[in-house]
Amino acid sequence: MNHKKAIAMTCLAALLWSLAGVNIKMIEWSSYAIAGGRSLIAVILLTPMVLRLKSCKVDCFVIGGAVCYAAFNYCFIISTKLTTSANAIMLQYTAPIYVALLSWVFLREKVTRADVVSMVFVFAGMLLFFLDKAGGGTTAGNIVAVGNGIAFAGISMFLRLQKDGNPAISMYLGNMISCVAGIPMIVSAGLPNRSSFLFLLVAGALVAVSYTIYARASTGLSAMETVLLPIIDPIMNPVWVFLQLGERPGVISLIGMLTVLAAVTGRVLYGIRRTNAS
Image (cartoon, rainbow, N blue to C red; front, side, top):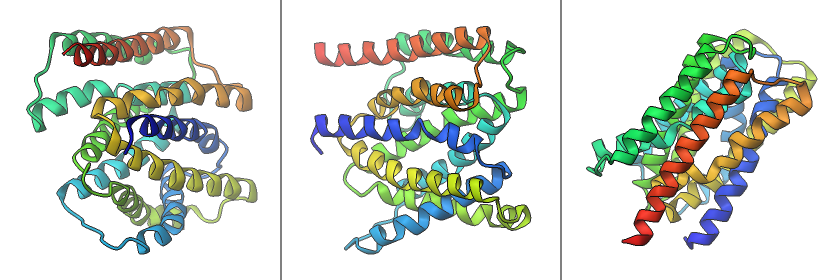
């Protein structure tokens, strides 16, 4: 895919993702039921696309991406329910640091001094989230949110390894895994009220559309670009939640957010500059 088109599609996907926080907050259902229900709707919407495919190769990279997506889906929704949207989304965007580590393990790419420095600042920012007692989040929610970043990094890595395939299959299978895992919780939770059901439909539609766009765009991006370009998401996600629900992070968490943003952005911009120089 053309690089500029891939960038534009990824930014669009991130804008759609930024609506997830407020959607999830508006659903009066258990976190596990939301994760399974959202994926069920996404599977229903994505099935026609999958059936139209002439070939559907499933290998270890496809399965890896699917498992990481399913883990991310549950971590993100649970953390969004347990802590502020700002904390949940910012801890997700520690992913570039994990990408650097995973690249070293799986792709034998060297971990640079810039990687080490950025990791130090990211973990310092993460510590501030856990120290903030006035922001409305919980320690449990912040711990689960760390999983957001690790799982999102895994998604990015496995999508990168599918550049010659159709990475959208990973998203489909990931939603399938998430849906099947969530069926018992959906049954035990019972039917949601009308308002919650409508927000759940929107959430499922956003997943189906945004992650399909993201998966296709990933074929034209580097692994680092796939986790940096969606920076619109962590910026706008807390804004929508604040405008709708008045939820705001504490001062210490805001400092942590700025620290993580600066570390992640600085590391990736340094990497892009070094690549262009060479």
